[in-house]
Image 1 (cartoon, one colour):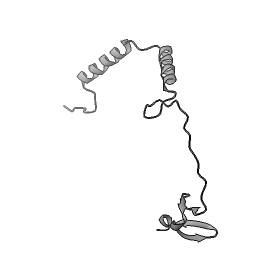
Image 2 (cartoon, rainbow, N blue to C red):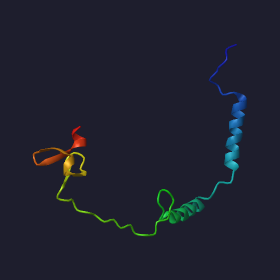
Image 3 (cartoon, rainbow, N blue to C red):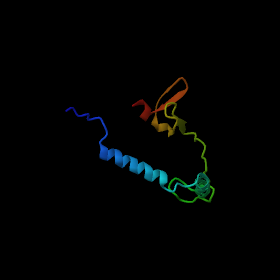
Image 4 (cartoon, helix red, strand yellow):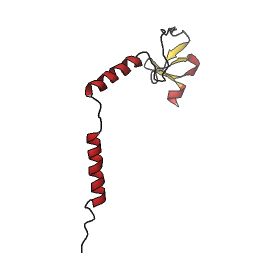
Length: 100
């Protein structure tokens, strides 16, 4: 007698039907309660950083303008000291790291 190996076994089929019935009869949360819960968690997330620390102060950064002995590399756009200039072409300077 030939056996169809692709057919679902009877014990597996009963188990799947039983688990579906269990899921359908389980107490599922109401959609409104889920939305309310998500809104509450979003309200708590405000002011948190990805690491979970609460940041309640304003960060102050002092920007220092480019000095007379510095240049901006045209390739990597980093401000470098003039001693790191590898070449200058068409009015654009390139640093040693970008030229190597």
